[in-house]
Length: 376
Ligand SMILES: CC(C)(COP(=O)(O)OP(=O)(O)OC[C@H]1O[C@@H](n2cnc3c(N)ncnc32)[C@H](O)[C@@H]1OP(=O)(O)O)[C@@H](O)C(=O)NCCC(=O)NCCS
Image (cartoon, rainbow, N blue to C red; front, top):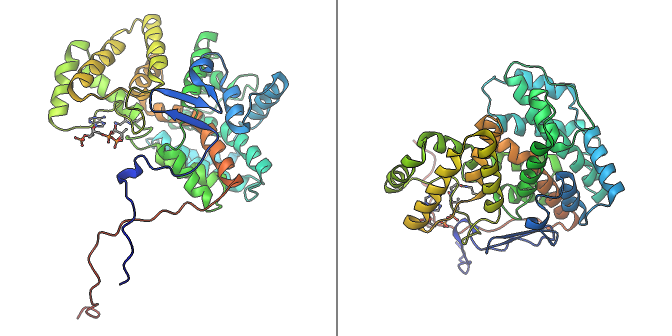
């Protein structure tokens, strides 16, 4: 066996620069920038469409460009009837993330631009995906509940549409504004696991649907997007603020991973937490459910003292979605409804400057040995 110099190795690729991007910068000191704009400045002012346009095109839209973009998304929301039929065939208890992953995959052959990886074709497909991912989530959920999908209302923004397509009610303006802010916070996060998965897939020159299917599969895991569903289960289990400290200490003693805490990049706090915490406080007052934030705050205090670990955005996203009236299994799909803008922008960037992503592994298996021949 030939030997080679031991390559540098970082478990979990921690700290490894795996590529260049002009889309997003995560500042380990609790900052987040999209295309040079601080998310804290624009998060609660911009609409999700404005942020999605920025991620995808590199610049903020003017009024006409934004209007056109909104109309293009709204016009692309409807699913091929075959995809709707597929969702009817799935077991009713299929997790919404599995419905979404299957749906994105099935959309591919219905897109006439599927195998055109030019910049313009990729942007067209990105718009379709941003629109249809939401429909897969909302219509898929209604179908799983034995209800019919609702007719489209193209005048609604993505944020308002998410509420409407689930229960048929156009939300109040404050709710839409809140959802825009949440979508803006979740829209991109440089080389997070699902985006990286999308880029690896795209780097083989596979199509954008293949890449977004990979991303959906990766987002589902509880160490990534699935954490916002698991956090809600944890908060329900704790129940009241006075139980939080004892609950957490018991879990830590058992060496359990606490959902909604820790982050690979942020060590001084997640840039998105202060905004999400404020939204949770606001919703707590509006709904009379102020206990959830009190539990989260107690957990933050004890976790800091015991482990020096900070909360991440998913800790507060969980009660926010709960107080907005969503079932916990919709928490990760809500994340996907926004992050699809980031995934698609990264696929466009990857295809525009492609080089196959193919790292090495460090071999730790047996040394070369003789094959003893077929078993007797
Ligand atoms: C996000 C996460 C996967 C990052 O993992 P990572 O970068 O490998 O974690 P680190 O290397 O910083 O971990 C340092 C130490 O803190 C511990 N730790 C990190 N997150 C923890 C958590 N949520 N609960 C308990 N301990 C945790 C690790 O076990 C490790 O302890 P050790 O040194 O005794 O082995 C991890 O923090 C985690 O599992 N969090 C919970 C899931 C979650 O909320 N995910 C959403 C992220 S936005």
